Length: 390
Image (cartoon, rainbow, N blue to C red; front, side, top):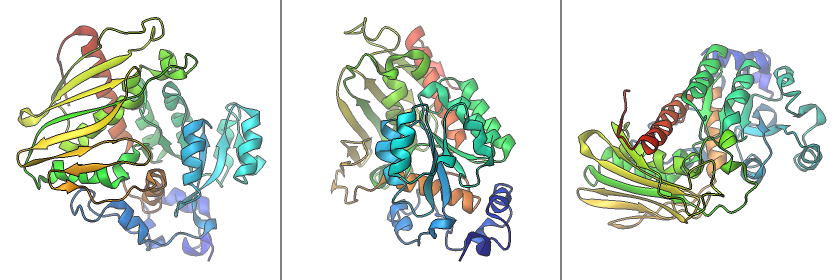
């Protein structure tokens, strides 16, 4: 059965436009029903819901173009798109001609679906591409998300969403104006260990959370990495891997912090980290007085999330990687599998488009987190506690 058959006579492009306007998408794809309560029944993880659902025929899957063919895009996202049920890899955008040939041939992408940064806007005329996934350095997320929205394409922006609150707001506004959906690449919202952490923190089976400690760090030694270029990265480890720890505190609590106080310890390599912080620590205060202390660094190595509750605890270590996540509570090892996080994340977004639902990781969440990241930096620079005005 063709896509046109299921969309009641509309062309694929017309159907997707109707979806973005909220017109009858669920009837068109009854097999892709809503995922249900994200954090309610913790025995129904997203991967379990996904496994029960039939894949769409290849010609009905939504097409995704990857923008920026670096290690994450081609080492994680492109392979994951070979396993997705509701979307597929149909386009590439790169400034490197050798990558056009290499990955075009590897993934059977026609030349007509391969763009560079000068021809990027022509993607508006390509019906093979429904979603653009922006996987560029942080400061470039805003421009290429806005241009994607203006081209009429739905967008996934990698994290962190932007390097300024103004850019993050502009991204949300552009997508709203264009009537397209915007999601952030927060893959751990679809990872069962972290879904269980959300349940423990928000549903309180072991009592309310009393405190949180977490962090993510790795030693960065390559001087050519864009991650230590402030103009491209927007900051140091906080903007790269620290965002995972920030996110984990927020989704454990299920609410926004009231305040933050932060500091950047003295650098051990000031000449190397001359533009960005080497290490940064912060403490959030949540309603009820719960404190969450986080840390991130390019000089150390750690990867953990720990939350105490009145009647127990949960501990995830390693916590934030693509695989090999391990977790336990006071009752023992958390009995959930490691899953393909990226395929679940991208299929969930495709499902949201097809069924006209809100993403569980929308642009507004990325905007919230950008405000928090900027407040952490402000506190570290001034030495003052920053109160959030939500």
